[in-house]
Amino acid sequence: MTTKDKSKDTVSPMNVLIDAMQNASTALMPGFGPEWLEAMSKVGHEMLTFMSERVKEDIQTQQALLQAKGIAEIQQIQADFLKRAQEDYAVEMAKLVELGTNHHKHATPV
Picture: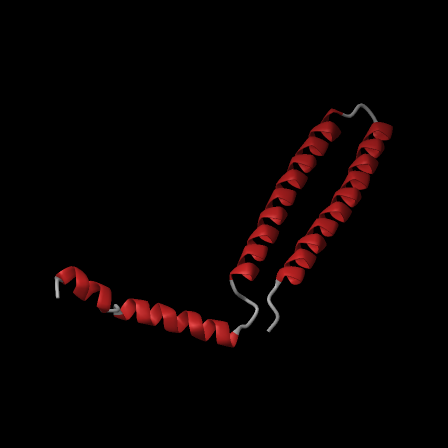
């Protein structure tokens, strides 16, 4: 038997440990496999993207308020900001629900 053949037949203790941990986590938390992790990654990415866009809107609104010429313009800027924020949050919630629904449809039954 060559050294090459020997390494193929020998399983490292680290591989055994990793396999045992994977099997234990699957048994303890069914349904939290790779599909779930992928779904959570998508949700996290979506939320970070949304928050980034909202911060940009906040900055633009603050700049517009600083340049406003009177109280009527300030009130209009604030009203427009609130309307956009409500619309944006409603759209974002629908996206997150969609992501969750799609994950649930594709999840493997326990």
